[in-house]
Length: 479
Picture 1 (cartoon, rainbow, N blue to C red):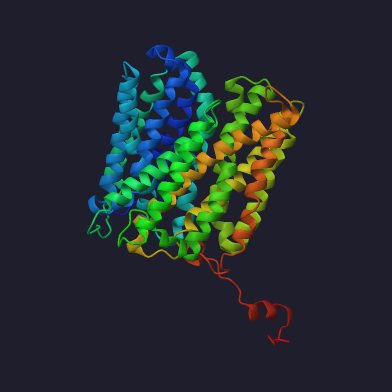
Picture 2 (cartoon, rainbow, N blue to C red):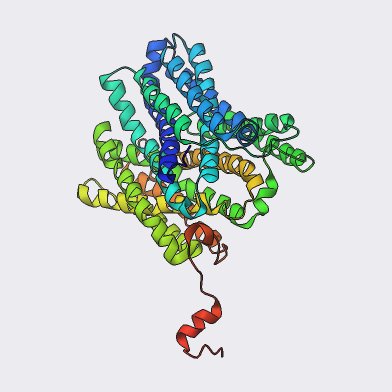
């Protein structure tokens, strides 16, 4: 089989991630309609979200080890098939218990698609093409959560909630076929001993934390959310104790000692506070503050898709010209300030101006994640790739949930400060300033990257100090 073009591989992986991200955000919009049809109250539907989160918590950490044992292509294809079958079962659900089981199956597919898809990319694409490939993957991954809510509103209004799941079927079938045709089978060294205790501990920790973040945005659930948060922290501490005494832990904490990987995890986690909050704050502001319909709100948030799409052509050039460190320092500040500008949006603003700000901000934010998602693997050896992708995806999923929680909490804080019973424009301003105040601190982390970090990915040749001095002194003499 001829080796496929890197863009083909990237688009196949991106389409799978788009299906997953779109499904999660569309579902939240349709929960009231689903509750009426299944004969339960809307709050009871939260268990359908929870079952999916639990599935993610269990299987994301194990995904790399599973891929090493059974092969990247086989596991990625199986993940797409599992997600598609889970979607069909969700659409056919006659009652809530059936839906919960179907969502758990769907979650298994989702948990494996994210990290194994990234692993396929890392093992299939040359380092010199990785930035371009990652920028193609990130477009659908960033767009899915933004267009999900208005798309869900359209389906619930004009069709039936079951179509939320049926739309995954043709995408899933096409994806499984394309994986078989264009993705090569590769595998790492399979683990000698599968870390079952570590899988249970990490699953308990991640599941409790994800569920606590989900509940924290629900009124009256703070006690349960706090209890689950404490459980997650305790289980995480026990896992770290276990991992320090295990030869092949399911999640390897020593990866944080790899400079590019550890810094990318920390800087990316901080930046994802803003990224995770945007799909929550922007549609809410447009619909409540501006009085837009769900369709109008969706059209406005399509600006993020435009920014992400435009970025893919520029990211390789920027990184080749300026290198990772300097590009991420400047890009982090620009993307944060771009989303902070949303705090000044008001209904009387020209639509074109709002759209333009969002395109600019999403361009810069998409660039940041293209950089983080590639530089993370700069110093990772081939035998540790599977562990690294599992570790990275675990933190990515956790911090996106934290971002939603932070956006909701910041909005509530704004309402409390101003004494409002319903969100007003001033409350949204507080929320945008709060989440971007966190993300701006990534500046200090980005400065810690080496000047020559990621040169194999970017093709950038950093100048040494004497070379820089020679530009000032033609003789090349140092003072």
